[in-house]
Amino acid sequence: MRIAIVGGGIVGLTTALSLARLGFTPTVYEAVRKPLPLGVGINVLPHAVRELTELGLLDKLLAIGVSIESLVYRMADGCAVWQEGRGLSGGYDWPQVAVHRGHLQMLLLAEVQAALGSEAVRFGHALAGLRLGDRVAQLDFVERESGAPRGTVEADLVIGTDGIHSAVRRQFYPQEGIPKWSGVSLFRGTTVLPRGQVGALMHWTGHSRQKFAGYPISINPENGEILFNWICDLKTAEAGSTPREDWNHSVDRAPLLPRYENWRWPGIDVPSIVAAGGDVFEFPMVDRDPLPRWTHGRVTLAGDAAHPMYPIGSNGATQGILDARSVAFHLATAPDIDEALARYEAERREATSRIVLTNRAHGPDKVLEIAAARAPDPATDLDAVFPMAERAQIAQDYKLIAGFDPVLLRQRRSYTP
Image (cartoon, rainbow, N blue to C red):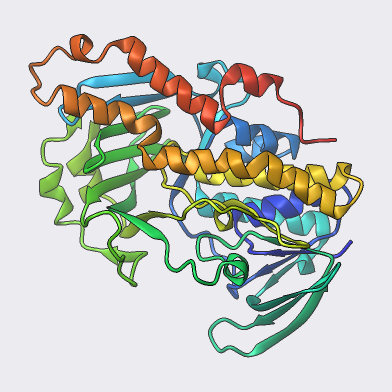
């Protein structure tokens, strides 16, 4: 079976590796000419770490990341709203791992090339056109910068994993337009902290109009220095506004510092962390509406190409990894390609659509919204206006929606046939 995967990011490479482990020989087509470990931190939640473990990557993942032990939500004055164990400390059979996105991508690339050969990932191939036949698809590729032709490929199956601006998705939804912007800008960076300054803890503080999130993503084995990933979320426009075209660029950190001047609590000094960091990059918090259909003939979607979502609840990369494992599993176990794609979409499309819509309603961060609304005065007794049982229910409901309730995850079937 000739399988073309369009997009060589985390989801595309996980799809390729999953298929390779099951005896398939896919080819990945990636638009960039040279792979680089770009990006910032992400969290790989236990249900995705389970999948990477089944691919034999747990030890390598832990070597480049940090096993997260707990999550704490705070109001801007430092008052704790909710805290829970994560990964092994949260009752899971698998850890939660915070890692640099680019380092995870490079790990997956090396594994794919080891399994399938160096030519299994074709760089400098941007999709320019796609034509469907009864049982095959033809893909036209070009060099992205120059537009020079890179050839036409025939495939029995195409899996689009090319992100929120997916060229594959655009073939079937050409009128969809640009992603939907929440009006929130994410200012992201990393800062090197001394040994022991922070633990294996995720910090989520503030509310939807002004938030700070931070967690360690690597620890230097020689000197113990911590690479700390941080995000400052700020409301900069009204929801539905048209985002600028020049996102993902380095910006001046100076305007951020006064906004977070008093955001300090034990172990975390937000102004100092932001001031001491490397480059600061600005991104829009964007998503797209859920689709009524992912699969068109022998073409389907996965990851952000299928279900881009707000980065709330740490589910973006995690859900893409689950897509990758699911589509590979069904291709290996269904009687034919069409049935495999039908089973894959039935399993994953509605499940991820629920997460997209839940994240628009703040997802697990809803505890921060309620706390800010009910206790705007620091003197308010938070327990009196926002009972702990209500907070626990919000956290549990999100785990059920996103598929990482520890009991249900333990019981779920394996994607390894």
